[in-house]
Image 1 (cartoon, rainbow, N blue to C red):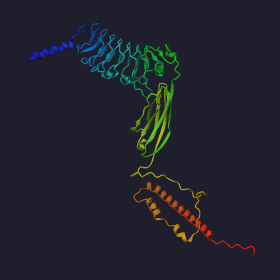
Image 2 (image 1 turned 30 degrees about the horizontal axis):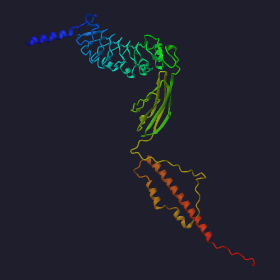
Image 3 (image 1 turned 60 degrees about the horizontal axis):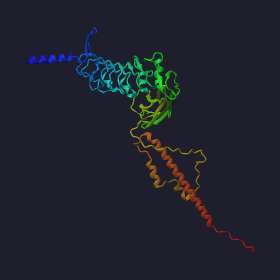
Image 4 (image 1 turned 135 degrees about the vertical axis):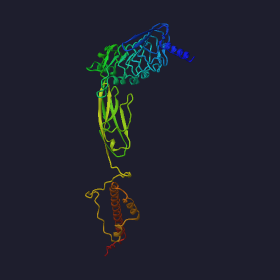
Length: 449
């Protein structure tokens, strides 16, 4: 009985592997290496993706059917699928998880459908995908995040849609700057024609760079038309006036910054250009510390980095790089960290310079001799002694702290003696005036005398 059950299970599994969906044709062939199975469904009566296609299918073609949507995990059982054609159907929506488990898929074609949007994040379920056909649909926009899922695509057809703007992120992917491109260079074929492009710097640079010698990108059709532009309509892109494009210019807030050890510093740079440039901070030294960066949004042309608790490793040259489709520009900022590492950090004391002795303005006047008060001029009051005692360096203070404290002590001492001298002079002047007032007036001689 157990053997009969095993035979039944084996036969049922074989029937699932080799069964062919209704209204479809299944063909087996060989490519010299192994047997390949192809399933083609092109009956107008098919309204849903077949769920019982053979598990060993390598190529699946669903063409000219009434299929309007692709559900989640529609091809989960076809892990060996390499070619998937869903062309000229009535597909209006695709679930982001429709292509789960298609790790061997190399070619996906969705030509001639009614798609107004495409789930770009679903491409990560197809790591081996190289060909993507989306021509003859209703796509009206390309999101910037699409560039995150297109690094491996070498053939992308976006022609005959309703696209108007090409994101700068896609141009960065297709035309990397010197020094940022991998080795070997990824060659790509793009279809951008028959779209109502807005003639701006992005689409202009895409066409001009594709025509340059050694370009990594080849356009299927280089005759792109400006259907939307300021003062232009229906003109070829090669004839468009693109004088608004401007190479970026970088202006750092300071080219050289000196900051003490342990302090906080902010480096800032401003950039101008059209399109609005993107800003990147680059540190040229080998140390790669963590720092915060504020990237500019649309219309913002400034960026800062904040470095907290400076150490000697933070010193070096920082470069602020601005980049747009018209070119690249950068400006260096040198950061110097000064100070001495000590066991404890002393409070900062503002240094005050004593006036030079040679200056006539601040020259100390020689006090008048007053025998009764001579001893008091050289002695300090109890309060002043306490002030001088506070600033006297203790034996536990390190040498780095003694110098400013001694300077402070001398300043207070000089200030005290100067104040005492002035007080003594005022007292003497006051006594002199009082003695003059108390002197008797000489008698006035009479006229008869």
